[in-house]
Image (cartoon, rainbow, N blue to C red; front, side):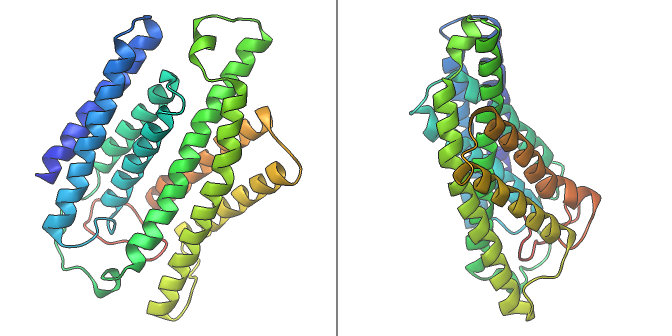
Length: 283
């Protein structure tokens, strides 16, 4: 049943993407609502998929690559729906819903079945603490990157005096910069606690906190990159276009760490088609 809900979520996220796309191409009062309600329906189906999987399997569904990618998509959409009540601009949805659909389509290529008993290391509260915190931080970075992309487009429209329909659909530069200002420290805090919790988890199980696995190494690189961004924003006062560009580049690094490293560099956190479990820092 959870797989059925998962497939329904994919269809509805794709429907939301199409609804928002039609709205951007053809100015109509119906399409943004179609996109929005498809996103809401997709989020509901996605939630039921995760809940059913948790109840059926008897453990927190965060231990496999499939679950990690699914949860990343789920929490990103959830944050988007929260932000929408502060800023109803359909542009956010036109970017977030294709991202969510793409993540679920990618997750569908990973192993869904769990064919081995849950290893003792995963029967701990360290698992949801570590994974939820780290992925929540990444989801915030995803919304920051979305805002950064919109900031660059909006700024370009203003500078070239192309004050048309797209300009009015996009949030103001101040609103987008505020999203960056509030999201950066919060996302960085969650990512930091997520990495620390993973290290503590590893130390309690294996006796060492860090193994320099490719995913761990790139997680550290990502953390350092966002640490620099926080410094530039808070201490040096970087804002506007520079902050927007950094948000986009930073999220590119997040996605490479989250998906690319696992697929290309391997390690014990690799995303492949075998049923396996992620250990500490397995994001």
